[in-house]
Length: 220
Length: 220
DNA sequence: TATTATTTTTAGACTTATCTAAATCGCTAA
DNA sequence: TTAGCGATTTAGATAAGTCTAAAAATAATA
Image 1 (tube, each protein chain N blue to C red):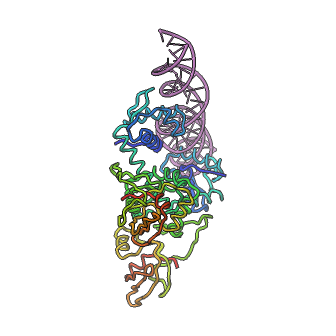
Image 2 (image 1 turned 90 degrees about the vertical axis):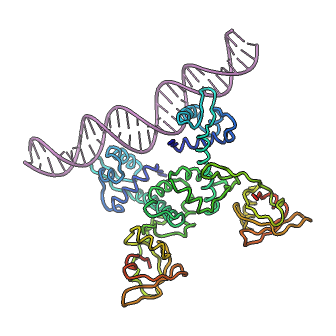
Image 3 (image 1 turned 120 degrees about the horizontal axis):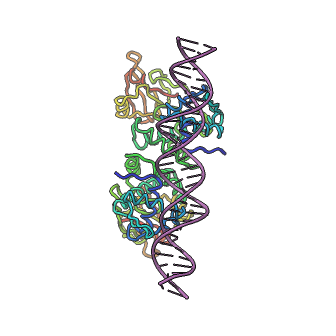
């Protein structure tokens, strides 16, 4: 069984993103820029990742991620995003603070930690930035995400992302009691001005202008 | 400002325990046994810790922890125990599983992570093993811990430990709704057989035999 | 196509934490 | 008071991850 060090995990995750999930080849310089390390360090790391067969590496010609590599990258991404959910939802970190901490936390080695955390968080499908969380098999559920103002009256869904993630907008969401991950139901729509009324977590109802609702992405 | 690597933190924590909170001197071999590393490795580490002035180190004569060292050790212990509370109370780890994972988690560097986690957990004063959690200034509140059956009728307190931590007993506690950290009030005592009735978290009342109550330590 | 420019790799060095093997210190007992 | 033993330290090695400087390969351009 292949095991990766924390540094190798980070490189592989970066490579996965750079290769757009495995579609494109990636160059040493690409990785260097993404990881903020020198190309010389990257060469060394690519050789190691090649030996572990998570990438296919040809000197001077860059690399392609392998199927095994994709799986492992997705597991790292999964851990990272689950920790982000925890930090934002439970510990009230703001979205821009979580990356580094989630990164460190995601490298903690334990068989059951992530399963239990996932369970504790209620198996979230999206991280606080709205990016999908792969399941334990690496599968990513890609479901339609629609702006809230385009959701049909009476439909239910989950807030999974916002288009405008400015602090001001996030504070507004927080103030009115909406958040990423919230279960919502559209209980009223005013055709005249495009405003909507939603019920959050079957408890709280919120009015929103069309502009605000258009900024909120919902998975139906 | 002094910063320690994860390994240095671990050594210092071990030294703090071995020196009984700074009362005794500690030898290289003591540390070697505790850390399960070779004496040669310990010598090297002691030199480093001496240079950082968290211990006072004299070659061939062992070491004493300094005031600064105590403070830093207590911060590491604090982090470790707070994570243990999280793992046991929220993620339902059993007491014997948590040590390693808490160790890894406690080395994650972040200004606010532990403050926020502490707040999220409701500022616990004891870890799942009943050991006290130092506050952010390193102060440890040492308060009397009495067996539950010796608590006066009408008194309130917090369950901080159990004497018998066998899985069977822990399962029993879990089943009846008691747990480490629970706020309790003694609402009835039967002198005849020594049994007690307690109210947990102002909600649930539980009957307990004298034997069971005697196994539960309460901070009043 | 030849030369220059860019990218990538190699070589050698540094740091941290560990090890083994060998040297050294300090104490105790003859 | 010195020999010997146990405890401790030093010396040298390894592994991971990084760096700089220099060499080599590829790509671009005249």
